[in-house]
Length: 343
Ligand SMILES: C[S@@+](CC[C@H](N)C(=O)[O-])C[C@H]1O[C@@H](n2cnc3c(N)ncnc32)[C@H](O)[C@@H]1O
Image 1 (tube, helix red, strand yellow):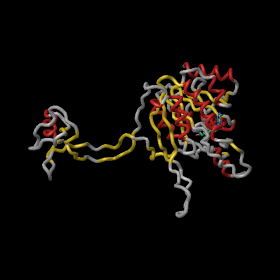
Image 2 (image 1 turned 45 degrees about the vertical axis):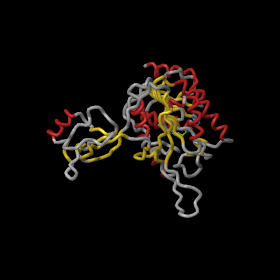
Image 3 (image 1 turned 60 degrees about the horizontal axis):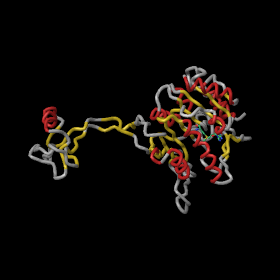
Image 4 (image 1 turned 135 degrees about the vertical axis):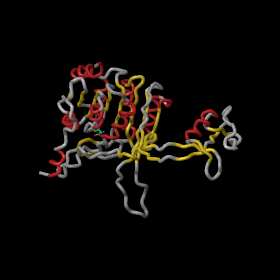
């Protein structure tokens, strides 16, 4: 037997707590059928990572011989792919709550066409961010006469259903020591151009704080004349974090923990789930693969709905989460959904 198979069978159950029947549900089947069974306005957050229009067939990386195909990303043409996406996005839009959000993971193969579909269904005004997340590069090493640049990132298109959705902005590690900064800022503010250490702000500028606060800050030692120029400067205290923007270079999109093709990194899902949901919220992933989204949601005390067409993907999710049934039957699925959504 291939030793790699054994290596990958070991770590499947990686969540310590026990799953209850109202914590979540796994649907095995075509997500278009499954989505039609979900009531409107019932889901708080959706993450989806569908096939990217890559033109490839994916199999489990660790089966070296007799590879079994896990899922196909081969299409007749772009039109067929986009109609597959559009039909599902319409359902996804219907099931999200008014204050909910959707994160669509894709890449350069079709991201621009997908953006247009999402703009049409969600409304251009509800587009929030294009997030670039670092990918593990399949580097072309030749240095001359190559056809194009290596691809360094995947794209995540973030939409809200309405302006009611707000995020907990993620932070990044950014260690900065105490530092002195000019006390002058652009634009005019009434009463903020008083004399300070013999200086006034330049025309069109103002001092950062009121005169009263400035006097107090001098006494506290956090406002002083610059030792060289004499102009006012204030102390910015040391910090260890700053706001993360939409360029996510600090984590990679992919992981190889369970050997599932195109498996995503749980850190990526942790970040999205923390950003756009709270405890008790319902998280849906209609292309769940080995269950990265539902594992992250379950760990963070959110409810989950995972769907996949591949039975082995569903079985992997089941083993990863613990004792949870895989549901194919529409009636059973609707019954279980009631428990997950209402509780
Ligand atoms: C890119 S993978 C998702 C990987 C996943 N994010 C993870 O971390 O493991 C896409 C998944 O979509 C599933 N899929 C493709 N078409 C589907 C459909 N119509 N309904 C449900 N799942 C589908 C495939 O079986 C595959 O597992």
